[in-house]
Length: 554
Image (cartoon, rainbow, N blue to C red; front, side):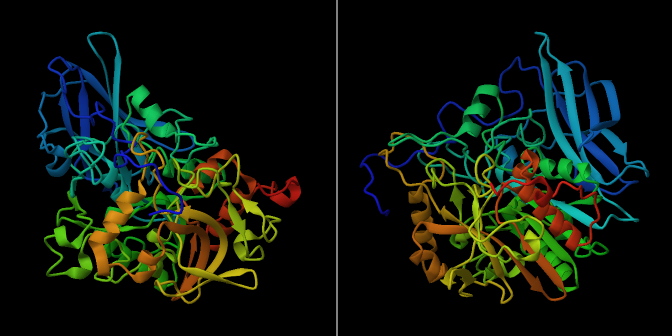
């Protein structure tokens, strides 16, 4: 199973599933003083109506809408609201809450495209402040910006465990046998910490150095349990990923509009008129139709700037968009027999036949982990540069072999993407056995592993046990390509670029790009400027380029 003999003992326990840490539900105790909210949809045009579904066990509460970004601004609020106390079904994670509409808002015509945070707020009888958040996106009807940021609503749904479960865990809640729900509903609140959380909350990438024979640490889980946030707060969505990019982009004068993955699924023309689509953070889950929209956009001359990682699973959406399906294995998916290419499993599965690399240049199973628990726990956390003269590195002063995004930033961390590759005369090249585009250039590399090796005999919880990966690979069997089985636990992370049709794609290949932008790594900042400007955006590129600052690559 691994290159090192593991201590014999119990199966590995999952670090995110200790006993006694339930997911959020409404009114978990009879005397709970709470207020909850969700919206009927994720996105709206000006002139359309947002419907807030509300449930409260307090006599009065306030609701506030803030357009978030570099300078958050309250755009709408209501005070002294009331709502009935409506319970949620035991399986609200799968079927939704079914609460009535308690308030409506018609989007004014002058509201800018953006990410709008909805906060419900009350003071409990004991004098404590209660706050929970939801969101909606305002889309641009006309006069668009040059680029659209596509919010990762598919991955948010996959990790949102409000109501008891998500695609990973919650059914049974056994720390040694996580069972996820194949259904995820949009009609429920969102797990605490995915929309808003304090600055400095831990990310999944581990900044510490593991001592010899040391037990792994998972700061994001430890922080979440101590402060009452979802264990999945750092796994997905706005507060952890997209917001860091937006704050940086607004600070640098870039104009962007906003869409969701759901918009790409239901509207194949959602990207029409833009020169660039931007995806940030953790975009693990996509539907076939979402990918169709992106592929058609790039083929027609659009550009894709992906500053994300872990492109792995196909999902389906219900006709009304309120339910997301992911069964993991075709054998469990009721639709797989009639439409095998739409089976909700990994994109590399032979039955699906559409590796992620055909859209973004890299594959999810080519990675995955770096500096997460005991997944390459003492790596540099950076990418080694191999093609410093590529346009993406212009003005960075990077040299062949330099480390990009190493300590203290850790760019090549948490979850990464890659393709099968080989070396010739000191340069990496794709082998093209896994869907890699013919024009793909590998710009930088980092090590990664597909699972964490348990050297603790099950006595120490770990985040992504390699045993789980072996079991999943065995369940898929011949449906997985040989290169996945032969690769054991070893993978890589890559920064890459390629052309497709009349368009172009840059792939940062890591979930952590926006974090490093937010931390101010000058090399990553310059690369991001290079990508956005090449793809049609015009911001305020300051005269603080790496060459003028001096210094060396981190």
